[in-house]
Amino acid sequence: MEKKKYRIEKDLLGEEKIPVDAYWGIHTLRAMNNFRISGYPVNPGFIKALAVVKKACCLANAELGYLEERKAKAIEIACDGIIGGEFGEQFPLDALQGGAGTSTNMNMNEVVANRAIEILGGEKGDYRVIHPIEDVNRHQSTNDVYPTALKIACIRRLRDISKEISGTQAEFQKKEKEFASIVKVGRTELQEAVPLTLGVEFGAFAEAIARDRWRTFKSEERLRTVNAGGTAVGTGLTAPRAYIFLIIEKLREVTGMGLARAENIPDATANTDCFVEVSGILKAHACNLIKISGDLRLLHFLREIELPAVQAGSSIMPGKVNPVVLEAVIQSALAAVSHDWTITEACSRSTLQINEFMPLLSWAMLGSLDLLCAANQSLSGHAACIRANEAKCREYLERSPVIITALLPHTGYERAEELLKEFNSSGRESLKDFLVDKLGKDLIDKTFAPGNLTSLGYK
Image 1: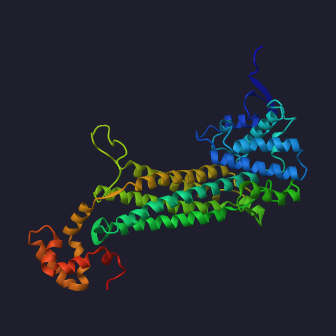
Image 2: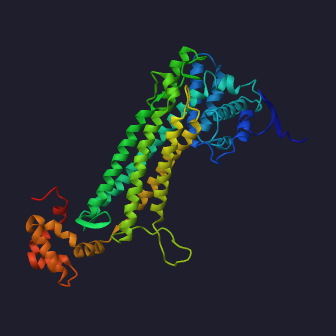
Image 3: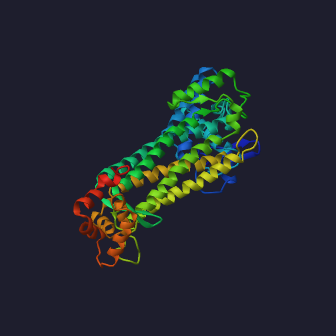
């Protein structure tokens, strides 16, 4: 007997053949055909977060008697499987889709329903057992479950990125201590400037990253208020009052997060400016990654530091090694900056009671978080292997005319000019050695001691 290859499913528009082994159904199939746009899948972190929301809704409906126990248990098990990373291939939709995310919500409803049917011993597509809308989507709308899931997914990744940024900060702090005694010439506007230490330079990197860590950690607060229970436009129409109050408790229980129901649920449904705020914080971090990575490339070019060699740099020049990790970090951060613009546009173009551009917002927001998490992992590991070239730092320092600035409290401006003029006509290479001869070793050693150069002002 030939094995059945398809099942027939119906919707408002008619009938379609669905592969018999597919957990998704007719709504997903139509979306697959309609949205062949970017080639990017819906973010896996969002899929798991949406399954978390479905589980919480199921628990609330079961407790209030709107789902019989056997159905609720099967739906809960199905959700747990998706949360645990199973059935990832059953979410084939393009990340960019019309309908404010309805297609992804229906995809989830169908997968959960068919998996639950299977758990109960039925055949996929037999929605008399468990229905995607009547049971899995009970008392819900895309317009409340989708934004709620996105906030949960973002909070999870914000916690991840906060840890990764902390790792990057720690590596720069280690280098700050390791390089504390290496005196070098500073630079402003790509010209030599007054001396400092390599440790101070890396300490500035660490401080910038520390601000990023604090900002990203605190930005979770902006996302804890959700509109779950608000259904289509935030008024809770078609959902029982008891459910609207209970769903928040179940979400807190399932996620372990300090989520709260929005005081004004229609506002939380219609307006998504909180994502713009958080994205701005991520953009600030991206800017720091770009700046720091660029500085490290420049210091490596000047040979004041040595970056770890990780791969051959050229297909034509033997022996060439490039700062490829830093270049990848810069590109990731630039992409996150571009995502910030996309998020801004997606949030500002919502109309009246919902944001119909939630799929684009979700793709860009979680994309930024994923990129910046990975960029920090790369940068922290790379920074740990950076070595200082103390001899090169000393070489630049001792021949730079700008270092005489450090002696101004002792010589005054005019005397310093005279010394420089004399040095330039002397034919000597080391200004520091020249100054030792003119002003004495004790004064020069004291002036250019790391502790003196890095103290706030002079004594």
